[in-house]
Length: 368
Length: 89
Image (cartoon, rainbow over all chains, first blue to last red; front, top):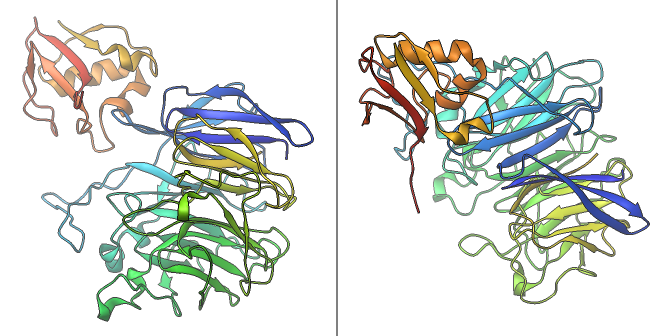
């Protein structure tokens, strides 16, 4: 794929491959506006851009001409809370019943034209059956008592950042929630069950270390060609499942750090995945000021730390959960940082080229 | 008839020149403005009809008191101004 969309704090930038190993920024849409993420619908080619206007709320725009023109479409609405109802999370902080931000957009299957899923802040899951024009909340998840235990992470309120639609059955959907766990539905949202066996949250009080709601997945991906294999970059480390996300195996001893936010998995090889490690918790910076990418090709038994072409000193770029992307070939990777750098690899991470160093903070990248 | 004006920062997203409305409350007045500019509603109000947290509405220079129900009275000669609730420097 020869084009990259970079969603940033100040616009949606587009870069294009001009020659082997050469990429150039070529345009920007929504300049000055906070673009949370972009999505391409593989079924009809439509692009979606989610905006987070500080004053004016979250908006969604769609382009049917690869970004030449955009139209504003609908946004999800949270239900009206019962009169006098003030919802608080388990720490006593108020959770508003209103849309704050889109945190992921996921298309349905080819057999489900027009179906989109949106994970939102705070803690909402919505679907659209008309390509984003109108939205319906998945109320069974919102009304689930366990949702009140979701704590949030990456934002002040809980949010759904990963929605995986099973390629074998579009009614089976798994969502990951920062400090809220991993939740499955087999009936397109009517019933939900957590499956976090094997995960642990060392940062939680001792009695809650293995509780489903304590688990803090930062990003979850499912291998398209081997959909029983899943990867999660968790606050506590890297976890992998080979049984349809029913149970998880922790992968330890990953240098320079097992912490990070993003993960991508090879589209055809479930044993190959990439991560961007960082020092955890209060610091959240690359270890030793070196920007690196970790790659495993053997299901997590070993990792290679890749830094050729990346800054190896005095670099403090943090990479958010949606800011690492892989294209359909499994060879091209890109990632963007909170300090406005974007790097691209055309050989699965062995070598990196710098696309940009002075963009606004990067929220997400996407090959289109 | 009262007059409703919107911050220039909104114009970048939704064309909304000043308009003249006849409402007895802020809600009635804004509803008439939103009838003229339908897409504007979601920029000013949240999905429950409350004023967005970072927005402000002034009636004759006074910030409205009822940000949720928008029940503040409006007179025929009132000037209603919709702007951002400025914060920070």
